[in-house]
Length: 86
Image (cartoon, rainbow, N blue to C red; front, side, top):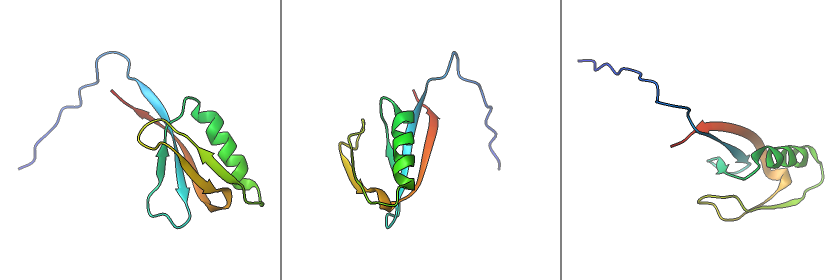
């Protein structure tokens, strides 16, 4: 038997936040980081990703991850994601 769900839109405006998702070489899972200004961090990491010289990157995001260090040449991919939250 198939159960049907009614898609009821939420009441009022929905809150959203942005996360920087970092894919590192050799890591099975992506790293999700939250910042006060995620667009600036995304732009900075995007520039470092294009640089041929390795740079040690140290970030202190908000949330469960307190500090993250990696070498810029280990960045495999980068995403800026907008997500709803309660």
